Image (tube, rainbow, N blue to C red; front, side):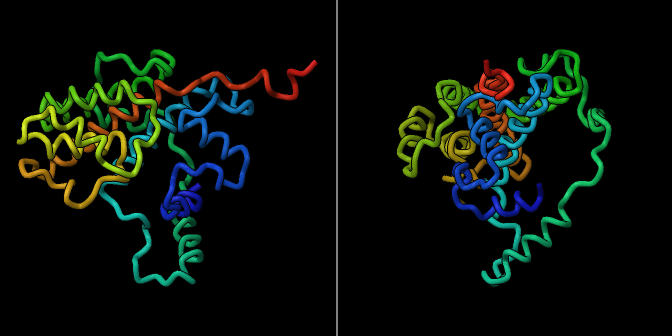
Length: 247
């Protein structure tokens, strides 16, 4: 819901699923963070679609954290008027009728790469994610130094998905293995992947990175983390816990 998305934009702590009033949405939010299995109300044959949404937002939220302000509302809007302003903004951001599945596939070239393991082979979801992954991986090869890509992949693979904390000391210790000339790019890529909330204005402009390279670096790091998040998700709905399974 666009209105809910507007509220989340100013929440301060996006990991606080306990603040979500609706129980079903709260359970889905916890699952999307890698905590538990899909809620019982989610049909097993739609697990791939739910996972696709979760992975897409793991990607988008990282890019948004790096490039956009915390709220879509101008700072000039007074606190007393922000709730009404968000409601109006949410109304205009609500999507219309969804287009047929696969409408935008032609925007990216066909690839021989397989889709993610959680997506049914040969389906629209698998094809879409395979094309996106191939395009963004090519962008990473253009704009992210090989040593930085290796470091980020290694760190993400060993990560449990939990926030590393408020201090950035964890990142600096890892970045020490990179040459001095690659540490700024490595810092931005690593923070984007594991702690986008720690990215500051000084991190967003590595000296050797132009606008295209900057977008490609952040996009590559965000998708690398999002793909890993999708692989960590449990796709088995908790049918055994539903009322219909008792007795």
